Length: 233
Image 1 (cartoon, rainbow, N blue to C red):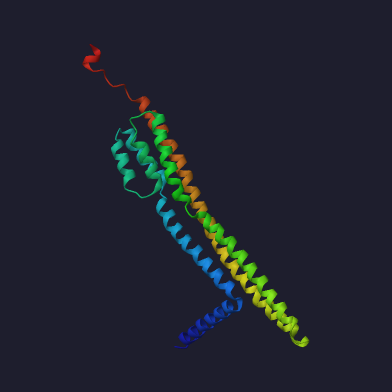
Image 2: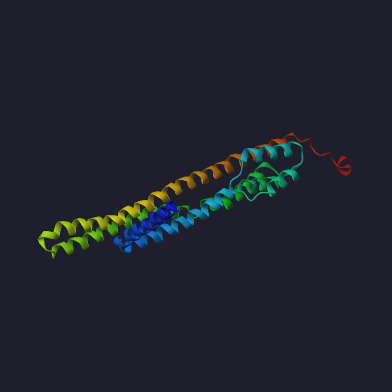
């Protein structure tokens, strides 16, 4: 019971401290909060999308290679159809042209890569923008707070000027602190998501090239089709 009461008091104390922190910073604190919320919303959407786009490329390529070498392209296509990831979508476009020339297979793969790459990079630039804007709004809030503090000190009693100035500077620095908290958290998330998107794109480029080489090599090794009776005559 005592632990529950202590926890409740601690929670109330934290919320009160947070409310005072936001209130002392002024309107710029709420602007930073809105910017931070916008960045978090984008980050959550990107996390969900990028992890759904990713797949174990090595396992998928080994499965496709096995089916292609067994002359069962339909099963290879089917193995790419059971996933919502981007790499299977690219490889599937090449497999559908397995009986065509290597250049045609390459064109199909390149076209699909151009189509799906923007999905991987979508809205990523917004995260960098949110981080920069949060920092700048924090600095702007600090400058605005300092201006207000010096204006108040100018008309204050000499004995209380130092106290008022210190209090004003302390309040003004709240926006810088909150802006940095927002910027740092968004920058960390942006870096993680950027690495994830680079991995996806790198695997797309690597395994699409391997697929084109596999299909091109397989086609060259296939025996020529027998001539029809009319052609033989």
